Length: 134
Image (cartoon, rainbow, N blue to C red; front, top):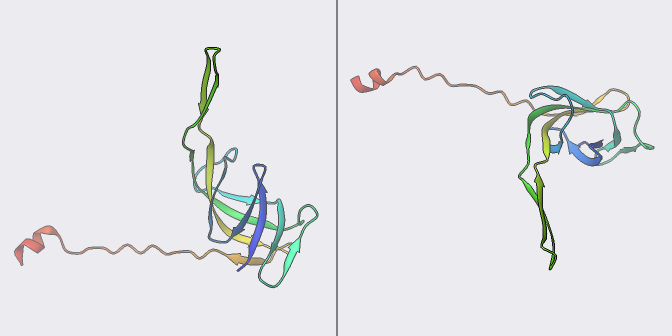
């Protein structure tokens, strides 16, 4: 199974195709939008690994934004005892949830690709009136 190490939002992530990640919010991002990560630190599989210095030129990872949202509230409470001093603060960190679709090598060759699941809707031909008659 091929993997890649990408850098985004000041953090590094080891990703595989088909994987869903929760990363720092990407600017100008909308749902169902395709994005590319060009800061690939390393990629490879069980046998071969390619490590960049600091990045691998030409390698990229293609992903799709599944959802944008906010995490749970983080509370920051500071108290100085015997001074009648308290401070309560908090925030909700924004995130982007992405799905990794393809991993490309530095040659532009596809190392791995996510499987596409075909959703087949079964159409029910019977109606409630037909069920009552029988």
